[in-house]
Length: 58
Image (tube, rainbow, N blue to C red; front, top):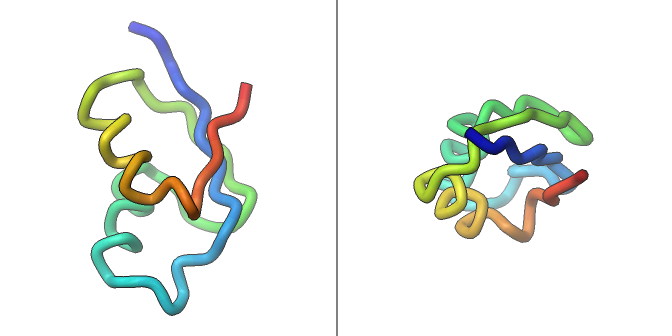
């Protein structure tokens, strides 16, 4: 299956609790942390919900 690299570029501090939980669910732990996740519909939906906090990198 294809993979996507996701990087956290903004903090979760001051954001709704649910967005912080989504970030943790993606496997991100701190700013500028990059994780490689599978390219599934569920993961893309999670990325869309926190698109202002993360960035997809190549």
